Image (cartoon, rainbow, N blue to C red):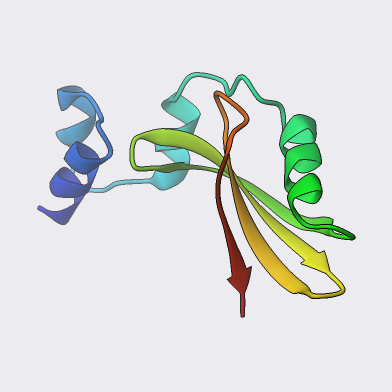
Length: 97
């Protein structure tokens, strides 16, 4: 039941909601290829954190969007940067404690 509600919330088609399990990696794999490459997303993420370097990247889906999630380490701390994989827009920047 949770899987069906979650798949509906993610905007998946009806055929994807029929199963009882939900594999996030499969959802992303079934999404169209991101317009923004991993290298472009890394460039955007490091530009958002002066002196930062990306230590982890994930391609994920959030609120119906395919996004790149970057973990950036800098002299001032760690930050999570969310980059829209379609437009390249920085959606969110938050300190990772």
